[in-house]
Image (cartoon, rainbow, N blue to C red; front, side, top):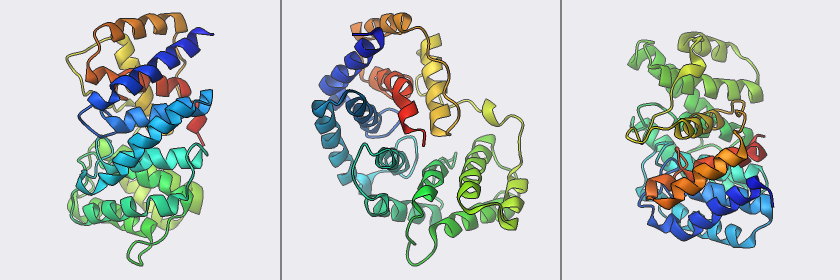
Length: 278
């Protein structure tokens, strides 16, 4: 068994034993991140045990969506994004336009009430949903609703002055829209207003554990951030060094170190994430 296999199996076994100790459900620090990795591992190693365990977690998460926030980091946008990735990759069965219809509706409602997160990273979810050509929400075209929201925010609510986080989310969405529907005058105007910043890739992901600083922790955070935005994944460090890091982390394991954002689930997902780049 290779060092890579040993690392990934250790992470999977640890998440199976300890993921129920995670108090949060979200993608960054909670059970959604653990679920995503376990599905990836199950596909890579044909592990029915991991698949069944991940399915059990997913079932519970889908039942809790009504009480969840909208955000990508810790809410239904991150859950929907993960489920969509898994379905499109053939790891989970289902029609995304059926499975994700409820999340579409909840996020549209939150958008209308201006209850999206400050970073507007819910747009990462909708950027991937474009590929499914989703059904209308309340008889309104979903993509046109999102474009109307972006135009409204740029023209009226923010006077064109957006944070780089919001600009980055908008650009990511517009790129996906253009890839599916082509460049239209409407898209061109929005792109110009959002601004093609040369610092697009320099936006640092939110560090959820500022008290824990290490080169490996930073590398995982950055890599996961690139994964969310569909950017090229970084080169993976030496597996021997990664094995030592995993062993050291497991010696004093706390729930935060299981997370996708800088934890073991994140490390494993970065290693396997190329399977979902489609």
